[in-house]
Length: 284
Ligand SMILES: [Zn+2]
Ligand SMILES: [Zn+2]
Image (cartoon, rainbow, N blue to C red; front, top):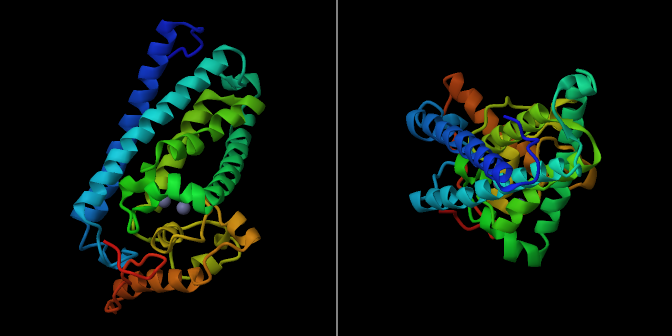
């Protein structure tokens, strides 16, 4: 599809329809697939990989599905705005790998990922200041025990803050259209994974020389169940540098991952912990 169609109503309609379609067609089926495999069909099979023993009420999952709808519309709007900016020459989004060479595709992907990690961490910390938390971020944190559909369950202002990083990047550095599409896809899959409620990484993962820099599903699940700490996204970089990992993270991870290993070895029997919020009360 040719996005460089100028600044006119026909172009706006074409681009916004594409953005809406792409966002909805990717998100609901993928989050739904994760839900179907882990929460429905594989509920028994993956029981020992479950981070929290309890499951949220159906109304909480419907809440996540509803709020994700608004986020998808806002992400599509931001995508359309980015193309409008590209048509006005205000971004460096380009089409055709040959313009900067094939080598620049993975380089721009890595730069975009580093930028997203940094933007997300600091925006997330800002949203944990009392005023913004109460006004905006609490929408996402109502899921103390998240399902895959919590991945995009944001207040509209948070959805703008979460999605704007891409436009800001593209206004400064060149990025090929396919890299943008691939990056948003990758970010979405990881986000669904972090909200899946299941852990598949092995015990000791958070203590490995290299792997300790990579985040886990347990890392973000702990953020939801305890409200504060564990703010980072893909990598455990900013949390380590700034000392914002929850102090129990490594031990808690080993407890969760160790349970799956014991179960695989036929020694199941340790129950997962109940979900608790920062006040320590049981979740729904
Ligand atoms: Zn948060
Ligand atoms: Zn979350």
